[in-house]
Amino acid sequence: MDEKKTKLLAAQIRLETLRTIGALGFGHVPGSMDLADLMAVLYGEVMHYDPKNPRWEDRDWFVLSKGHAGPVAYATFGIMGFYPMEEAYTLNKPHTHFPSHTDRLLTPGVDLTTGSLGLGISTAVGAAKGIKIDGKDSRVYCVVGDGEADEGQVWEALHFAYAHKLDNLTVFIDKNNYQLDGATADILDHGDIAKKVEGFGLYVQEIDGHDVGAIYQAIMNAQAKKGVPSCIVLDTIKGKGATFAEGTGAHSSQPSKEQWAEAIAASEKAYEALKNA
Image: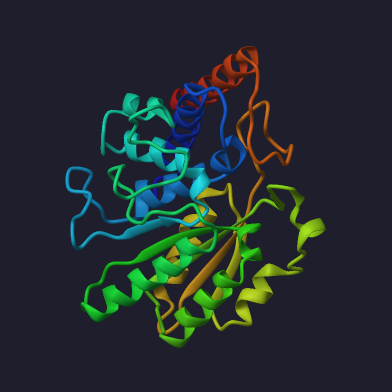
């Protein structure tokens, strides 16, 4: 893996995520920004896909079960050439193809519609099973929020994936320790969520969700594990890279114009610093 190139891509994804949400002026900044490193590894180094043919039958699938983080996906898809990046700046505006939650009927690159928490992982498991039935080698990557894991449907999906030996499925749990109403530990404490998932039979790894090298290696480890699905728990900082949101635990953000300008300028500076390093 080209670590420098991947870090630069992650910085670009963060910048474009801020620009995308900033064009609207408010939105799910925190839970989008903390996934930039994962998106850079998946779309820069790991996944097989064709931006000019988003429905390519032999592609790998990406399912953002925490669908409110759609802007980080839109930024990634735009950078990777699924559409001109500027199109995503119409986020959630009338007649847009970029709703606040991902919709496969509207946005090129979105494999499955998500937003109602718990449903995305269930449909991702279904996709993985279908790929197995079709005898294809494609893989399915699914991102679940740690707050989303309050939903019983998440655990039913993991149970099904284990029972059907879906080793073409890798689930990422974005463990940023916050959900809509506060800290996950205060609302519905999962304890050691990695051990909890392991109890469902999956091959589990827990890593720094902002270390692109660790993310890549964990995915390679998952791909090498045969006969069982995998889960990678990403320890992340909610709002990573957004000056007004990082570490606040906020679910959605509505900063002032000055705060937006400051955040975008800081992100541009970080991107340029990596680009010129």
